[in-house]
Image (cartoon, rainbow, N blue to C red):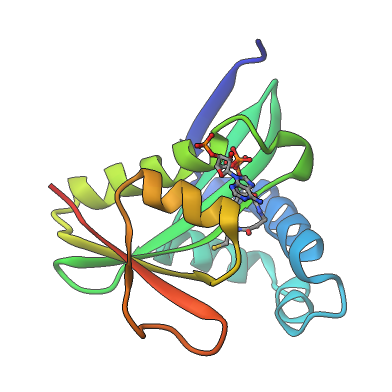
Length: 154
Ligand SMILES: CC(C)(COP(=O)(O)OP(=O)(O)OC[C@H]1O[C@@H](n2cnc3c(N)ncnc32)[C@H](O)[C@@H]1OP(=O)(O)O)[C@@H](O)C(=O)NCCC(=O)NCCS
């Protein structure tokens, strides 16, 4: 069984973060996507700022970075989780759940009570990950084709 490790990235990891984030955007939306085109032009300072402003967690499988999730604190009691992604070859091992659990631990330690996120309504694997951690859908919380999920931390 290859070893897995989840770490929170710091500013000095910006190159690794940039590589992983652009891989995630490419895999999910393609290189013609607006967000990809914006972030592909990020400077080192932009990547460092992202790492300062938001908590970024990376999962390493057998020594290789294979996935990530991000979170930020919106207010004293609320946090937002976004950008969950795993390399297709690393899916099906429960790593998505472990990544989100790391973000929830971070939020809990900061005194957060409520965590929200958005996902595509038809994303069964993501829904399963979030629901297994206790998230429930907020009725009519999202836009077209999107749902909002919420979790109260204990
Ligand atoms: C969402 C994602 C991170 C989940 O990866 P993962 O942790 O490897 O997910 P798994 O393949 O282990 O699946 C998680 C659960 O969903 C189930 N599942 C997977 N695909 C499913 C499907 N099409 N229908 C129903 N259930 C499904 C799995 O059986 C598993 O259930 P279990 O925990 O009860 O065993 C990964 O699919 C991914 O990176 N997708 C692309 C990016 C994305 O959609 N991110 C989410 C944005 S909100």
